[in-house]
Image 1 (cartoon, rainbow, N blue to C red):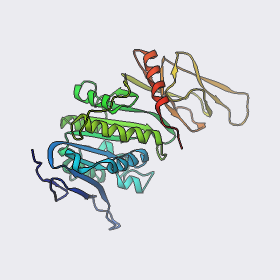
Image 2 (cartoon, rainbow, N blue to C red):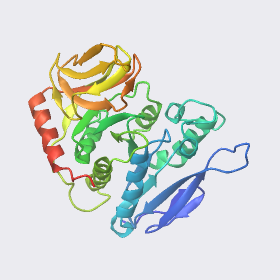
Image 3 (cartoon, one colour):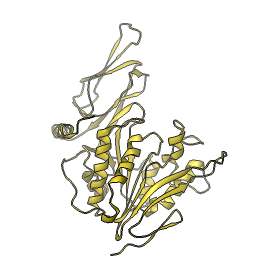
Image 4 (cartoon, one colour):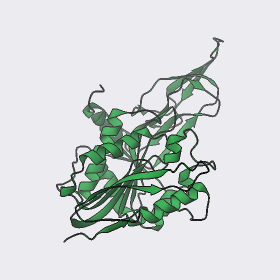
Amino acid sequence: MKNDKLTICDTYVHPGEVANLALPFPERYSCSPLYMPMRVFHGKEKGPCLVIFSTLKGNELNGLEIVNRTIQEIDPSKIKGTVIAVPAINVYGLTHFPSQLPTGGNLEDCFPGSPDGSFGERIAYLFTEEILKKADYCIELQTGSLNHNILPQVYCNFDNVRTKQLAKSFQSPVVTNVTHKQHKLRQTTEALQIPLLVYQAGEAMRFDENAITLGVNGILNVMRAVDILPKAPVQEIQPIFSQDEDWILSHFGGVFHTDVTLGQTIKEGEVIGRITDPFGVDFLEKVRAPQEGIVVGINTTPLIHEGLPIFKIASFLDYEKAGNIIEEWESSKPESP
């Protein structure tokens, strides 16, 4: 069935067209305008609308690159429905890092937004009304924070069967359950009944080629799963599902040494790191695993203050199976250049 024309950013996009559009940001005192660029692929045939977006904080460069590479992979003549790709929602945060918004705070907490609210709330409102409400499915791309490297994984709400199925089709090694509590963007998508996948991998302000490649392939696989692209989804690995993840906080400040790697299975009480005195005093604090699990996040900076997160541990029902799956995934990764 032939697709209908799409209205977005006060522009008509006709079936079979590809449009480069820009959503204007709220005005600033400098009179230098900011825009949210996007690429819209509007297929000739009817189908679902997938919204792909990144860079809510301004420093998620892996996500930015994943969106841009995915754009290059899409052949508009072969898709059904619509794909709206937004490399950077928070252009202000991208160009003013480390500041995320002129009013402080972060954009994620501004959803669903307000036309008369703060700078961030007005951006969130524009994105919700102009883009999000057109979506049948959403994929957000994140990285870890500065100096926090994250094992590639997809977060979704396990209570939504369809979302969990799509998370499986993404083909990340780990899928983790999340709720919409204290997550305004997720609350907004839940209220709009839009399945949301959040892919997180690597660390802020750093490119991770393996994480980027997995992200691009994961998006294309989801597009196959929802019939935007032809062919069946690729099922090379069987992801493992995690119900819980927690960061271990440092009890001391000093020089941080890690004894484990991302994806490694650990036992309760096992020494997984050490904190030493930076000035050579005879001081050593052993960091022990509080539970059995798999390391899915590591603080990569050597200098640690007391109370900073240092390891993120995911818990699974079957640790042997989880370890085998991550080992298979590790062995299948391409060699880094």
